[in-house]
Length: 283
Image (cartoon, rainbow, N blue to C red; front, side, top):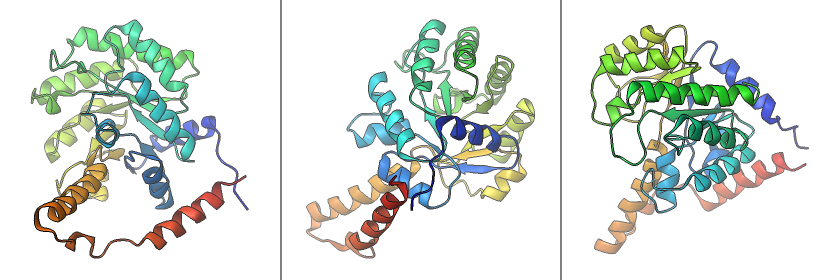
């Protein structure tokens, strides 16, 4: 017998509650199957990955249209009982009015949270000027409030993944975004203890998301002790899958060997998981 599925409002309430205390991991699926498997592992929330989805569809990160990305959000939000945070890149708009309209459309997909970057997707500049970035944050906040305010809004300072490795500037931006109405703050690319602790301290008591997308050596407990509230992995899980695929396919093409198939999870094991998973979801 299936269990009742949470409504969009339920998922948004759960997601907001997760940000109030403690520390949780929000892994990043790139399709329905990976989302369902992550739910089966017991995670409490999920987040999309722009790079993971783009690469799976044959695009570079940032190369897809807003329509494609919104359809992906809707598919994943409907596929899982967990709250879903949307990696909404730069909101697919430059102007505050454009951001507000994009955010309205994003909310309509059923996501429980969304993030907006302060870097233009066209690559013409590494970062928006601070006053423009703050106006974009305010516009996103207003759009969320008009929709009821339940969606958790994360504002991102992209300094460290856009070649502007200035912690002071990133913190100034995050503090400004917090004052402009962001619920959660995020500086992807920082990876040193002193950087993480400085960001957490600067925006307290608002929660901070940390991108643990590399082998930085930090455990969940260690990041929690630094004050991190939410840990995402970006496109790293998708890259794990793609890396194994490329390595094994290259070995077949180059050497005529199939050693990469050793130790794989079996087709029967996957069939069992997804068959049971679908039964649980059946009305």
